[in-house]
Amino acid sequence: MKILPVILSGGSGSRLWPLSREQYPKQLIAFNGKGSLLQETVLRLDGLSADLAAPMLVCNENHRFLVAEQLLEIDHEASAILLEPVGRNTAPALTIAAMHRLQGDGDAILLVMPADHVVRLNGPFHAAINEAISLAESGALVTFGIVPTHGETGYGYIRKGQSLDKHGNTAEIAEFVEKPDKPTAEGYVASGDFLWNSGMFVMKASVWLKQIGIFQPAMADACRKALQAKVQDLDFCRLDHAAFEACPSESIDYAVMEKLGANGGEAQGIVVSLDAGWTDLGAWPAIWEVCERDECGNMTKGDVLTHDTRNTLIHAEHRLVASVGLDDLLVVETADAVLVASKSHAQDVKKIVEQLKLDGRSESLVHRQVYRPWGSYEGVDVGERFQVKRIAVKPGAALSLQMHHHRAEHWIVVKGTARVTCGDKTFLLTENQSTYIPIGEKHRLENPGTVLLELIEVQSGSYLGEDDIVRFEDQYGRSE
Image (cartoon, rainbow, N blue to C red; front, side, top):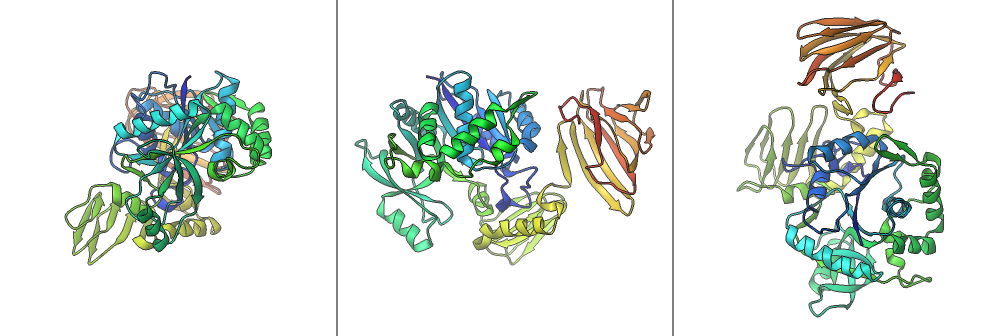
């Protein structure tokens, strides 16, 4: 039977603000200077099994082009990319994936992995997966329990039940336990009966759907309707918004795993112990743990100077950050925001994000540099009735044929060659040349060359919001 990796990439990563933003979340970021968390999740499956299918990804529809491009960068394809119009937690995401698989290539063993984990040791990881696959083939729903190294309060726990092998590596699931306080967590670790809850699972698609039908019939119905009314958008499967929005929001644990063996559930819940250098990058202290640190315990990235500083994370993106006399702190600098926090309060970073949203501020949503399927743009300056942006267009890419009701634009080419459509004229611009786009004029910007096109755009007008775009043609399916 085929093994189908299902990679859940729908989170927003608010506790890793300001580096992680709603429109560019943590799973798309490379924290260790190599691939992004999503790319590393895909790559660690290489060599697992000859029966391994191309992964299926479930992600937010706003991230679709970023996800597809990151797969292209590592020369991997997806069997499908399912787009969630709204977030509904992990159980609906897995249910949609299982239904999609059964509608297409038939039953498969689903290997369910969030896209924001770090696993340092591929050998033990693959061995645990193979053990879980053999159990799932007999109809079990399997999760991985991480062998704890300390009394962590940021993770949930799984209490092991009856052992199923002589080494104690597999066991029945006795219960799931919420995130404990410090003394309770230390007691769990000392007992040897508890494992960290990894949030990774292995089961047959058909078995999962049967359990969802028993325990969560409303969820099953909403997912079925959302998939039946799907729209194929280029390489993406766009779920029906209204049907999926009506779906109950629940995690895999709460929806099914905690209920196995009760209320008519026939499947067996099993936990496989995993000791492979696993970390869930849920908050900044986890980044400090997994990255290389100096002799004073500091993890630094970017242009950083330290004096009398210990056990501190300092991440600098755009300017020099200097620290004096710090201990056990988090300092994260980006182009438009700086975070300074105690490590002990790292979980509360999401409270800042909540406040930003309440205040209607863009820093919760996007960075100053905003990615688009054709490239990116970055805000340089803004004032009353004007805005300046730096625009980068990838070779062969093109913006939509569009117009604006409230702004005019001046374009100055800095690097590369631009093909410009303005009204009924199409012409080329090279470095140091410029053009003017009047208010209300249809226009398009293209890069016909083989190098990145870079230009400066000066907007002027009564309203400069991104929603003042009327699209007529778009090669990325965004036409109105």
